[in-house]
Length: 305
Length: 52
Image (tube, rainbow over the protein chains, first blue to last red):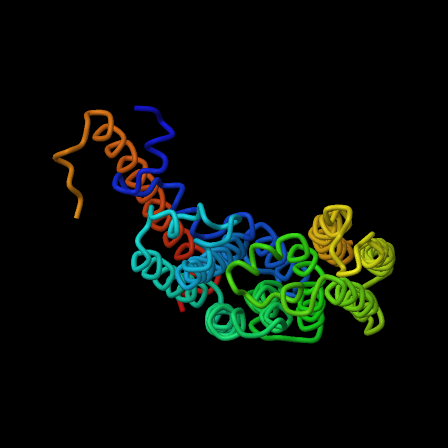
């Protein structure tokens, strides 16, 4: 019997990698990075072992929230091409086991954060998990096209958690970084949803392109990018960041506006459907990830110099 | 409920391979957890003189 037959066989149990896949490892890269940036820019030095533990806690918490999200969304994941092969809809992991896994890892990450750093960081971490699960996944995702705008807050927490792990309190700079990641999320995610809207439509998820159409979504990508760029300069205006960050934020911002403009100006038919297979939206989505990496990287670089 | 009586030898071997993979992963996680708690305890006791 060939290997490929076994891969699809649910009777034989999950592979170890299925349990890792439940944590959405690809999404975790950005979470780990922004959490580390929060630790680096904090004015208080944290022991490297405790700092690594804090990053581990942020990673596990984000993964656990992702596992609970996969448990809740297993019905729509089975319908969407992009997610149909995930461990739960493919039948390799039982839904109840995935939920238990997510809950146990959530509790573990919060307790470990409290043990290694402080209660404020543990509380913010617990709040971010609860926000992603209850506010985004359960409440907003299937109800409103603004799901990603409000739910995006969940993904903006890591920098704040990193900062509080080091300092034990929240101040203006991590709040500004939170707002930057918060406003960055809509153009990032709507660029993706422009070319994945068919999947969302089949699953009945009211993403913006499904409810309001592609043309409306393109305008929103552009407008949110225009709001984002000046917001990224506020740390410089408040004297919290220097010229290295200021120049980086300006250059990156101009580039992001260019990509968002290309999304807006994409060749389209009278219904707003792209005639270029959404090439500008794909480019904007890819660039938005690089943008946040470089922007937050510049933040750390500025602080370290 | 797994009905392993109808499995071919190849399926049984695959089942064992997957179970072994999961067990190794669990071993690595538990080992890492023990080392981590040990390291945190050392740092806390060394730098702060207490765990909490």
